[in-house]
Length: 221
Image (tube, rainbow, N blue to C red):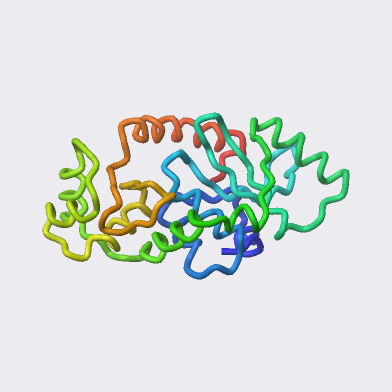
C-alpha cells in the first residue's frame, strides 16, 4: 500500500479494518505508511482504522491522505513525514483547522519510530499470514476454547487439534478475532486471547464513531 495508491480512490476514506481494506494493504514493505497501517490494524487498542484522503471544511475538501485511528482517548491522524509532499503554510493551516473541526489529533511519525524493533518485526510476521484461509468451523472452535481464558499458542493448538497453529492464530489476529502481546514474538509459548468484552464494547463504540465520521465526511466511506 502506498499513499499514492490509496489517494487515487474517489472516496474520502477507506475502512482498513474491512476485508476490502485489509486486501489493499497487500504484501511487502514498500512504504512506511503501509507498515504503520499493519501495526495499527493488529493493535488491540485500535478501535477503528481508515485511510482518510480528505475532510470537508466550509464546503471544500481539504487534502489529508493520512491514516486515522480511533484509540481510547479519541481519533489520531498519523502524518508519515518521510513520505508526504511538503505543505506550504496555507495548506498546513487548512489541514490543522480541518482536523480540529473533526476532533482529530495530529501525530507525526517517521521511519525511525515506525520501524522500531521488535514490534515492527512482530507485526510483519503476523501479517505474513493475513491471506490464509481459516475455515468457519475451526475459527468457531478456537473462539469457544478461548471464551474463559487466554492460552499459549501451544495449548490452543492441542485443544483444537491443530499442530501448526501459529499461522492460524496470526491470520485471526489480522482479522481482529484474536490478539496477543505485540512486544514479544508470536511462537508456541506466546499467549493468545479472544478479543475481550472491552474490545467488543469498543467495537460498538467504533460503529458509532464510524457513523459520526460518515456524517462528517458527507456520507461517504
